[in-house]
Each structure stands twice: as structure tokens, then as C-alpha cells.
Image 1: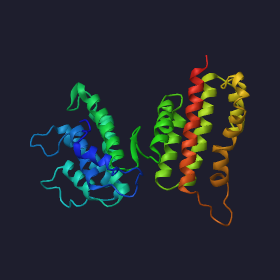
Image 2: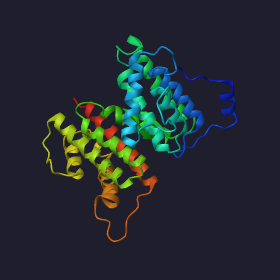
Image 3: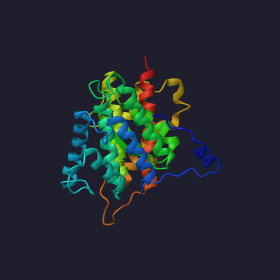
Image 4: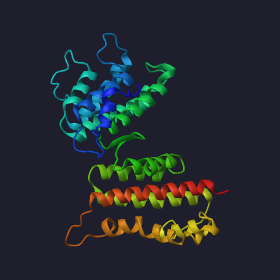
Length: 312
């Protein structure tokens, strides 16, 4: 269902009441209810008297999977499934759970089912499943933004969003460009970097940033059949990118600082803060530095993959 531009919403925007800074530590009740509506529409309404068996089976798979992961027999507040559908058990948990990460677990797993199960032709929506599921994911991401909650569902994962502009201009294009067979490795590593960041594992996020950066250059070399040292680091791979004309020769003077930027940004950030022993005093990687490095990595990956596509 489309997001309606209600009068009250427009007035709230005019008064400046729309949040312009993302929050990550709470999922408002309003957003939770909106998410229930979206899931129910995409996977099927668990409250209907006549319910397709595949709808109940989908909710059952989600609930039992979460229970197994959490080491529970039922998702609270449910303590007995007699007379309670799996869908209602899931939604009650989503609406009441205080732990934000567990709430996002429900959203992520449910929308994976939307993306992978509900769009199939033999599901309840038939041939319109793809359109309905695309609309559900689009609405979910819009509701996150509308409520000022800094998460998005992208490529089957809930990822943290720190800057809407940078996310739109760098992160999404990077994920889209890497979402091919040739770039499967760096695609996974870049998503892992975001997952680590979302979980507060900033050092691990930087390590995966460098992995994605290096893997992208290796993938370009493999695709173009350019020779390179498989054991070489980022500096060696960057040299191959320039030697093979990934950047046109007539631009190399104007972009003389680009090599320095690439050599000193992602690799140096990782090496100084995460890649080597920290000594007797543990080092802390601030969230703002990690966010900056994630977006720097994303921008670099967009540049490299776009430049490769432009080569003859």
C-alpha cells in the first residue's frame, strides 16, 4: 500500500516536527504497528478465519526459527499456543519486545520471507506477488525514514543508516553495483561491515571495509584478466588499476591526489585502528570514524565499479 500524504502529516512537516536526526535505540509503537500492517498485507493476515495453509506455514517457520535462536519454546508474551496463531504470536512479540535488536530481528526475518517467499507465483498473491512485495519493502524503508529510525532493509539485511544523503548517494549504489556474480565476495564483505557497525563492532567493520575494497579491485582484475599478485595488498592493487587505465591517462594529472586518497583512506584507517595489535592499551574506534570510513569505502567502490563498466 502506498504511503499517504495525510493532512496531519503535512502540517507536522510544516511545523518542523519531523525528526531530522536518526535514532537507533528505540522503535516507536507507531512504527511497530505500521510494520505489522505491512507484514500482514504481504505475508497474509493471520487473523482471518479462512487462511491459506501456506500463510500459516510461513509464520510458523519464522516463529520457530526465532524461538530456536533465542532458546525459547514460545515468543513472549505467548506461553501456550492453544488458540493462538503463529502470526499473532509473532506480532505480539514485535509489538511488545523491549530489546531493539530483537525487534529488528523480527523485521529482518519477516521481510526476508516477504522477499523470498511471498513474491513466488504459487503464494497467495499469484502473479502480482512481485509488485506487492516490492511495495512492502519500499513502504517499510519509507516508514523507517518517516519515524526517524535509522535503519533500512537492503538486500535481505537490516542495515544502519547514518546519513540519508550519503546512504542514497554512496551506500545504495555500491550495494547495487556489487550485487552481481563477479562482485559476490565484496558485496558480502561490505554488508558484513555494516552488520558489524550496527552491532557496535567498529574494529571488525573497518577490517571488512578493507576486505571489500581489496576484493573489488581483485574482482575487476579477474573480470578484465589483468595480472596481479593474489597476496598483494591495497597499494599493489591500486597500482594495477592505474596502470591498466581504469582512470583515463588524460585525467591522471588532474586526479594526481586520487591514488594518495585511495592508498591512505580505507587501508590506513583499518591498519591504524583495527588491523594490527593494539598494545597494552585497548584502542577504541569512535562511531563517527567508522561511519565515515563506511561511506568512504562505499564511494570508492562506486567509483571503481562504474569506471570499470566504462572501459571498452
